[in-house]
Length: 510
Image 1 (tube, rainbow, N blue to C red):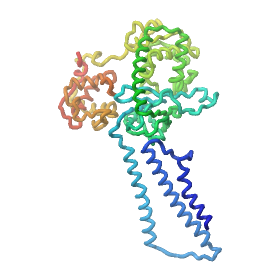
Image 2 (cartoon, one colour; image 1 turned 60 degrees about the horizontal axis):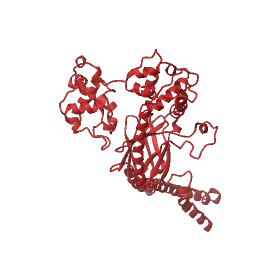
Image 3 (cartoon, rainbow, N blue to C red; image 1 turned 180 degrees about the vertical axis):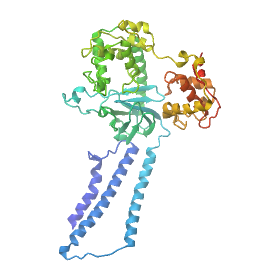
Image 4 (tube, rainbow, N blue to C red; image 1 turned 90 degrees about the vertical axis):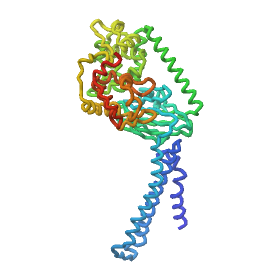
């Protein structure tokens, strides 16, 4: 009997002592919330184990001591009210006791208010884009595991598929709010040490927060099946003491200034074809090979081939256009903000001369810059004589005669405006117009939405520097712009009575 008792004590008390060190158990994490989640998990696990021990213990005892071979005779009884009440009330009490701490933890997990730092996390196939609000810092974080390790020709490293070129750097002892969204499909930002797993949905903003207690490097992954290279978009967070974080912020701003100077200097440089090919290969393997494959043959029916393709061997203007601005309705992203002009020039040169394409073109940074600025004169120097460069898109106000545009009723503009708002604006400013202050300001009763119409038109068309507010002058037609501005000035109780016509958009600034 004593031996049995000792065994039971071991069963009950040994797991709590070793649970935190178990490889396959939930990690305690490095935040207060992750600690609460861990203890909640273990508490409920122990409750379930205790229930199982009691239930199966009674069953085993009954089978051993009340079996037929020992002459036991089964008792017959029906409709025991006491038993029914007991097995109803007891589970109810257990569930309530489990629900109270679970609810408290869940409420705490969903409270991102009063954050010291806000970071926008944008998922795309297959990398993460981080933007620090109020710091003017943003960058892409890309897998750096060598291709040779992935293909099995080289020994896998310690952090195989969990290493990036630029980690997300955060301070400890500060409340950090994350705003999660996506450029294409659903991703999920998951860092077990922070007890954060939040979906990044295209067109929507999800919130999460953390307060890291210990400096260190913490790793995670995309936890939503998002396509071919889902397993190749890791998350690496470097948590620094507050003073070191401030020093890092200063370094990043200095580096950004130096990068801008280097980019400007590159415009006056002329690199050899060999130099461009060497740099272009590295850029291609880091940014393009995941879809188009290292051999340029793509994946039939999914990602088009570049080997012998009309894009890579045709007019340079068409090639630059799709690399810079992407292709709507496909997985082809716009790289104008991800890569420098020099990098785009190099990778374009590489694609036009690798795998037997052999066009002979050597694209320079100045050619890319000229194309981006819509100046075809210099760009054409690098383009075959048959090429006609496509100028960059211009604002609608500069391209359309106001007199040619229709005059619409207030109701028609409101109906169309609601659709445009839901598609282009609601992800940040919310369907209700309440926004997510301070990251995305409210439009309900705002100085912009109920103030001078000209100011409203200006910020919608040209955006606002230093914020997440984009310029929509090149994205929407005059009618769409007029409709959404009319909607914002009259929805949610704003009721200015203003009716903005497409002609007002086209004539703005003239």
